[in-house]
Image 1 (cartoon, rainbow, N blue to C red):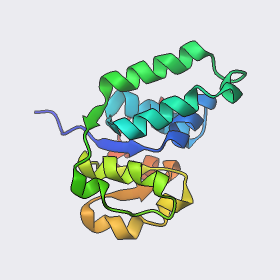
Image 2: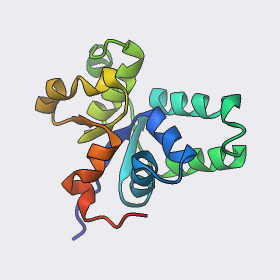
Image 3: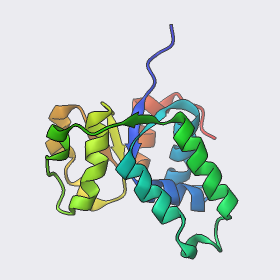
Image 4: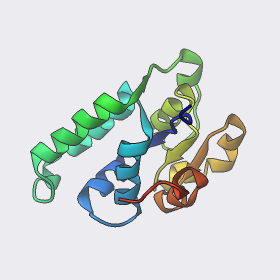
Length: 152
């Protein structure tokens, strides 16, 4: 019997950082997730990633074909969730635009939300009782969920 697949939400900025660099925690983490876990997306969280990846400022760093390929890969492997009204009504973050990541994590029963955003990281203790850990990429890589996974 296969162990359950780890479900997690990754903030758009971590996906983008992972794409822009070959090394570093965001790059290692996002590659591991694509190979060994299941990212959770809502329509809103995926729309933010897509919108940010299309920004012209990334043209000189990452080819459009590579950005499209990432989105297609994520779309295919993602666990897609619809956000129930009770969850979407909840406000967590000082920057309410970041609530979409918490909403997706709660609706998708994700155990991790990985972000570099301090507005989300400060909520970690508050959401732990709901079974959601909010951590930075380097911390996520040190967790038992990833410690036995071969690093790319």
